[in-house]
Length: 477
Image (cartoon, rainbow, N blue to C red; front, side, top):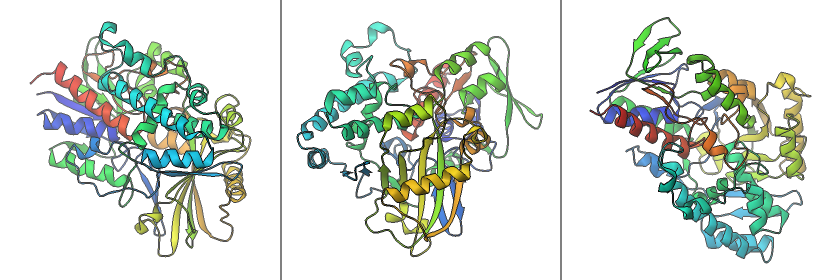
């Protein structure tokens, strides 16, 4: 039996802690904040509730398979996409309904979507056999089938993949959006990110009644049942180690806690920059560049909006210019694509009677807002103007608008620069360059959005499983 400290109580760390405890290890989770869940958090005000992190759950079996009791709700639509010319694409889980919707939007392109979906299924299957199955590069090269390597379209960007299947620029924009699931640009991100379409049009996209943060609550209850010791408002200040192995951690209070294994559920840059300084690894992380960050408007809205979907995406008129703003010019886009989440469509508990809670998200650079060319308040007004121009005018309906910026991500979660997913997926080999799940000392492990296999609820859950398996290999009972 190993003594395990999990530094950070995000979803990946919680999954790893739960599996390790069930395997008989003694586990303690140390979380700096007063609640578990990491970015799977919420904001409440005046009877309105807003999810600050993920708003959609794919592969729910990764969590229900842990024995979590989740009240899952499938929205009537996966998403409603509105393009700059006013046209609309309504996405449904069923692939044939989706292909028909694409055909109505762009005659002759339904066949292209079917081919795109078929490619995504093959890519996802290959990824499950290789990339998602364990640490990156953990298998001998000869153990990876050439067919699996070809299935992920190596050397092709997501935009390049979209051009392979679609001639209509709106559909290229739709396909390119999957890069933002990893905080990246479709013009640089690897094509493999397009495999997300197979998740959405396979197992579907789900909502957890009461808000996605109820998933964190369910995990916390499972940790308690499994006998995991949870220490809230307890910050890990240092990973203690000699040249070969970890020895434990030092808490911000000064207390030293011995451990055989330390699972760092932190930003990898924070681990190698502060908790266990390692300049070489920190330089490698920096070479990836930062993923995008998020600018959130949390709006308490009077009245109900006729015909509004649970999930809507309002595309910009210049996608390439938008991503150049975020990643090259490092400024908030003047014409941002906007995600609008309105859970009250399916869950009236998220807002007072006759009202709606809107989460409006724009992708922005991972940079302190004090260095933006405009203030967060001015950018809030710009976003509201863009909403109105695209048919969602909230004039006279707002009770309040609270903001959540890259500075909040940095301060609350220790995210480097406020980046959502750590390093960006820039270049075809970027996923393989992310920090691995084993650290440079025996007994040190990494899990979370900045480490392999990446960010988002399904991937951090997979990361938790990978880390639990590595500990089992390294510390057999």
